[in-house]
Image 1 (cartoon, rainbow, N blue to C red):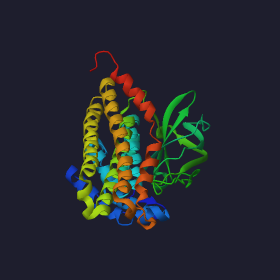
Image 2: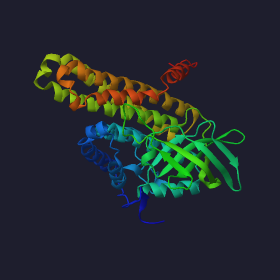
Image 3: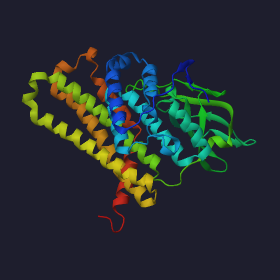
Length: 375
């Protein structure tokens, strides 16, 4: 294994190794401050943040969930959600790419065989980035020698444009859910920049298209059977982290826009501030429950973590939209200038919420709380 990882025909230096949770959060704050400087310009002109994602990799922040068995730090989930929120406050699109990266690593941790985990976690420690995706139903995966022949396309997913590896869900015959680990540089893998959403404009969403590719059996992992898997719950928690970051960014611009007039709207400002604080507390609670489920992955613990993560992500999405709306309600006409681009917070919150199966989460939460003996 070399000392550099390759990305877009450029050499990226090996990543720094973060040694503590304190260093991780300090690193996140420094990066977020840098990302915020030109975040609005990137949004207006859809300038993709390749350099910023490389800075994330080199800092070591993309490797903070690597398990200790593979020489990683493995930060707590509450801290991980806060770190994603901090990055998303600086740039919501970068936060979403980071969200998808960490979710792919949790899938790797829980599903893959030891040899595959050892190989790919080593790449993560060097700075490689991952993106999770899912092949469409018409994708073909057929047995071929020691593995499968793959053809098809994924659905759009954030971060694919920035990824070195794609963790793609598929169905192996006869009907076995699996995850395929594909290198972006594999011959036969084409990534198409086809994202044109009005929000999260620079999140690296793309479609991966595979003409014909042989995937070795050792690059395939079985999918979890539980609907409450820690991977699903972590995805909800980190999605909540991005929404919290959007809310905080909108709040910061709100306070700057109203300036000395803040005393005339103190109750309404206080209401939004409390909602943001309550949202952060919900993420912290869900993170602690997810810690328990990861250590002791029994069905009851995983269901409890899923319920709390569902509550956090729904609350965070509502808080992001409410705060983005409040920016214009409280700041008035001074916030409406096109050059200010303050509408990006609402656009980001709205687009980020679209992929959340809210009704399904509410239904599942109702079932969970209706179980006999639950109070």
